[in-house]
Length: 481
Image (cartoon, rainbow, N blue to C red; front, side, top):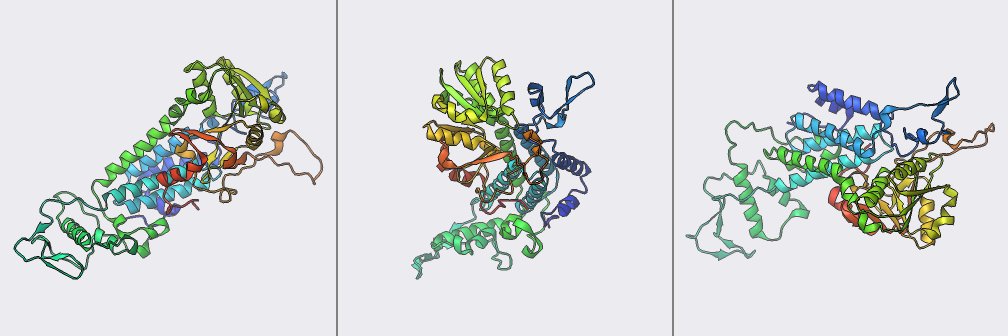
């Protein structure tokens, strides 16, 4: 029987007790998340920004009067690198532990999702990746749930007369092979599925065929030397998402582990190749002599613009809003200008004044929500509103691998909204009646967005719901609590 039934932290730690190196790696990773070593470098925790902005609070004066940077080396990891690091950890746990069924693997993944969420709740990238892996496990299990028909499993008896029963099925046409013992105490996978109202078939001939096929496979002996795990657990013993799983999710399948590990590798490949696939579309959307406006700092947009300039030989002018109070726009302006791109940095208040001269607005995304809206750096909503008023297309450049989120705006208000220290505002007040608020993110509704440029191509906001159905399962948790 499976050795883990509950997706809780204590249950997972007991399960990993015999693998001390995995437990140590998991605790180290979770501790790094809690300490903020992987905070998003695009916003307030940007380590390289103070080099470009001497007035930043992250500088302190030395005795000689020079400004010295207070760096935090651990915060130079991008979200894609963080997701890849978490994926490698999950693959190591899944590939080393001795789970025996897809149901047990889903419990392990749900437990990891809860741990990641409790340690890194303000960023959905890790939770999205866990949901994608859970959907992958379900997909592989559904592909394997109906065994293939083997020769001799079904025979046609031609010696019996063909008569038709009231249901219209010829009696005597179908007969199970002689070596099959019909057992009613242990139902097969397919018969259990057919018994469900939503899976019941009105074709009696098809039902008999599936029953004979399933029974013949269920009664076949296992090859010598292959251990056969115990049967499915009592549903009352499992917790979390496993309570909703059918019994065949807890049945052993020899080829399941290999197929799942291959699927995990495909997810890792998507993470590694996502940015390259986005950059290859730069020549389709950026043309010479255009004026492009973007907001604050985004590594995805930075690489997108550099690819258009260096590989596609496009000559264009980039206007970057500084993104106060974090001023990530100054960092991005220095990076682009050092590569030969013509750049102009403006105050956020000048966005509307310069928008009539702009041909295209490129915005980054912190998360893409289920309704096609976007969680973006604070101040991005102003750019989108101004672009709509001036008939300028707003295009969001983002990878769907870990940023596509099944939440709706009202579900993510307490999850993805973050507030940082008001010290970044640079305003002091001696009055207790003044509140200084410094949000990190904005919400942009889908009606303000013209197009998403993603690793799977150009996507309209109205098509996001279709992408969700391909990579996530509605039965998996939207929020890991």
